[in-house]
Image 1 (cartoon, rainbow, N blue to C red):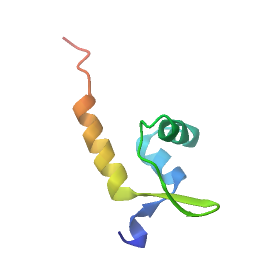
Image 2: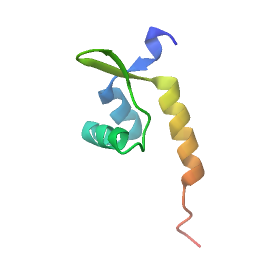
Image 3: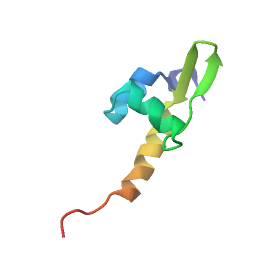
Image 4: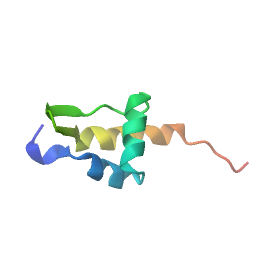
Length: 66
């Protein structure tokens, strides 16, 4: 993993189109992948892991139109 692959909570929320607090709630509920803790005040995600998680969610799409 390269440094450029690391993204912040703000960047994750932008990619997922949800608030930063929603990202944290999803992590706590084990609905979303947990971040890496780099230090006491620094947590980041792997962008490639976030994108892979997002692709996997496409399998869970419900067809509401019948």
